[in-house]
Image (cartoon, rainbow, N blue to C red; front, side, top):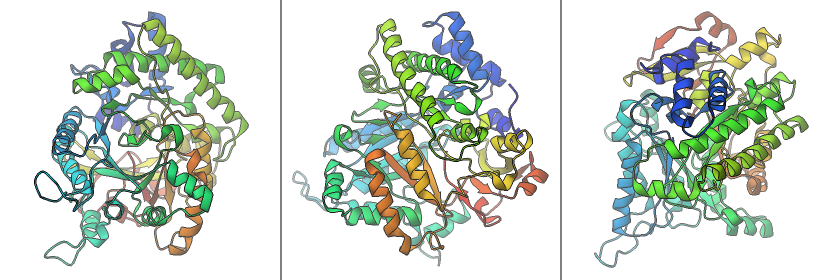
Length: 550
């Protein structure tokens, strides 16, 4: 397999290549055989390995990392519920979090069961520290674990919209309002100057949970409530909190993985991820074959993956969640001359994705005499594997024709490269599109309604959730400021019942943006070269837009 870009190859070498999986083709063969050879005919194993080699299906990053290694911790994330408002549960949640983080998995928790800050503790006579305090404790565990120095801890935290600590939670990551003692700087200032500067909850993505009562009240009165309005203001200005929508039969599914695409009501549930690369698939018939074999791969993974403690094993046996996702969706659209919107041909392809995964999941689990999965599809952000495949990530539009990508090298220093997007390169070289004519997430930043509608349309084919972050102009600019809050609030509220979650990213909202747009001509002259980041954040180098993601 030849990578589309030098940067894609560098990412593979830095993150996944080792003695047992020196090349991508070797990794694909080793991984598929490890996971599937005990359960599938050799002809299917060989064909599946070929699809992985061709990057038509790519398992999640933990599958790739542990291929050929003694430990088989193939799962990306674990969903941990705060189960009861007790001292014992506080301690147990910390133990569960550390157990999962130390095997390389991200974690996500809903803290709504804990009493609010200042509430009386009857047995001790003291007062409660509150849910946000516990979130900070878990965040600090992740900060110290850092997963062996090989992977940044990925954490998610949520709180119910009606919780007593919701006002504190909404501004918990307002670093610009947090002065640093002995300086004239805020935490935001220091984070922008040094991405490794520790800020509260900086390893944690946060979202507010909205339930059926909130939705039906909005439908009856047209009033979203003060919490939702403040949530929108926060999202448009600082990017957080995001929104977690849990309505009707999904009301209790408030648990999410770190990137929010996997949903559950059960403590110690686990994600199991892999993505179909639609940009590389040549026909709807091939799509069906890839989906079938990919679904079987993930089912085999539930029998092979090692887990951090016994309850995770019990919940996996009960739920057996599969997170078959897609990526390369915008590349698929661009190659066919479509804009970033739902079209009838895409409906047909997504119908195959949905129906084939459901059919295969039922039949293959029955053939293996194991429990049927309760859900089969979740669309992850696919940041790293999307870059390796040289395609558009998840359901996101192409971020930029050319950009700088920052990353941590050898777990020690931040470096960056100039990258011409692999999809853009093919469209420019083979389809003769002009760089300025290609729609990107930044050119769509002012058309957020189209982005929201597209996510809602794709959600119809997904039985868990979609991780997607909508880029927005910088807060305080013409198209993103206090005067635009009202319109944005109504559009999001009107679409909430068709979404499972929502996040956005206003340009410059956080330090450490991994992607920064650059001119196509600049990237051409610097492509393939690696530069060390010395002092400042990469986003400050040229003042152009960026995005946060994984």
